[in-house]
Image (cartoon, rainbow, N blue to C red; front, side):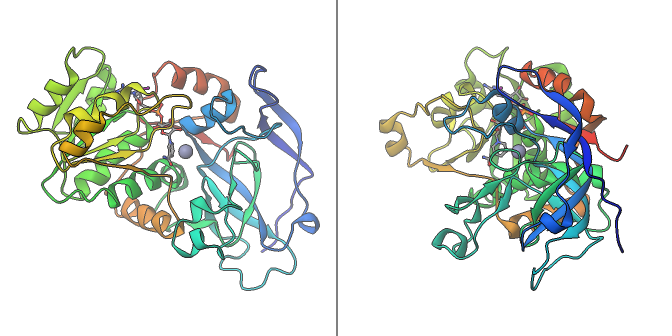
Length: 357
Ligand code: 8ID
Ligand code: ZN
């Protein structure tokens, strides 16, 4: 199979955090001869928009994104070229693959050997320090792209590559057991609505925390047993504990993009409970009472995306229909509006960009 690869493409480019996103029609495409060994070129069909892309666009994290930047890290497409002198490639031209946040890791360091590929000191991050998927073509790496199961349609697969993978891994390492209560601050967002489904698939009981009628409806339809609106509830700690047997949840997976979603979690968790920190507000501190963290035997863990195996597992569960991305399709040219809606907290589930047109 051979593909006709153009020299230029349409891409959404961030030049600086105070400039509007530019949709360029003449963005260069890397030619096959210019691909390094191990690199591949992916022609995108679909890409999700993650709140992380908004953080990168606004440059509101303690570590800066590169500029100019093509954001995006929930991409699905076909491999159209592979760099020369790439031995033992696990993928071939024509394969349908996913591009996730972790574009590259060395696979040889201690972190990679321990399965913490995302913490590799040489990590390259799609849509952050290397260009990502908000373009018709993206350069990625044969050892890190993720094969997409045949039964999973591309638009449905895209957001599993970050949102799904991240919450799947957070749940996997949370030690929550079948029948346990899990609280999900941020439940109506991209990560959160998938967390409801992976948690339910694990036999957990879900308390969703977010705001607004649309997100309430989504969370309840996806399997949340209880709902708390964080904007309408005065005493969140009391409400959460009452909702979970009067004792509080065994676990909280915090995917809120603001520090406020974290503030009460240590207080409402049941003794012996675990707080999985997932949401990434750039400047917030985790205000946990040291006394009660110790006195209640609380565990606090940071959980950062996932490795290649986590991605395969998250996709397999989605392919079996146990986690479905609730998405609205838009075009790449709509990206600015998507960011505005996300900033205002108006996106229930995910926005996925149709890159096939
Ligand atoms: O590897 C990771 N840890 C990882 C991976 C991917 C994304 C972390 N993230 C981070 C993102 O960078 C972002 O900071 O997780 C956060 C959530 O990403 P998202 O799900 O893509 O964002 P969203 O769709 O905007 O959903 C966030 C939800 O949080 C709610 C909002 O209403 C929204 O539905 N929320 C907020 I903001 N404050 C809340 C609060 N105090 C809250 N929900 C409950 N309580
Ligand atoms: Zn993401």
